[in-house]
Image 1 (cartoon, rainbow, N blue to C red):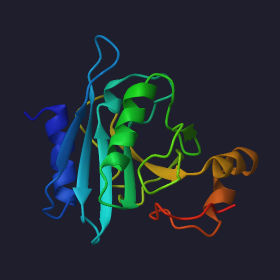
Image 2 (image 1 turned 180 degrees about the horizontal axis):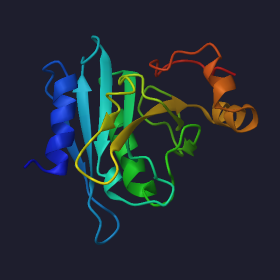
Image 3 (image 1 turned 90 degrees about the vertical axis):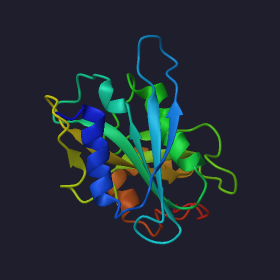
Image 4 (image 1 turned 45 degrees about the horizontal axis):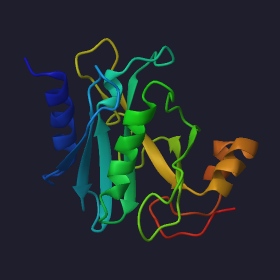
Length: 184
């Protein structure tokens, strides 16, 4: 019988096309809680694309999580692991406070990585995983649901708060581009 984490990693391995992941553990800042692991895949779907996924957020419990427990993902044109580490940091820090629902915005408080002015995120469906691949049965009462984290500017998060995620998503912008200009 495989463990929960083994099932999750086997699922990711099946999607990776043989690309070997890198792992970065993030220690828990809360006593009695598990840490979060950042998992990064360079050049998995296309050359120059970094795909990151967390593991550990879904070990927490929130009343709002009724259909699945989230793990975070990011897809950016970069080779800087800071993007993957940033979502793992947010998963560890916000696991009891943020439900990571579509449309939720998060202020990172500073540029996420060197060479980019993007300083926060919006949560939506992941680009790197189709809906079936974003649901992972790990043997728990609820599956893991992989959600996408999209780097944003403060002005874009304000726009989302005022106009909604759908209006933002329809604007002209490249979700993979870490050097893009604000869409609004």
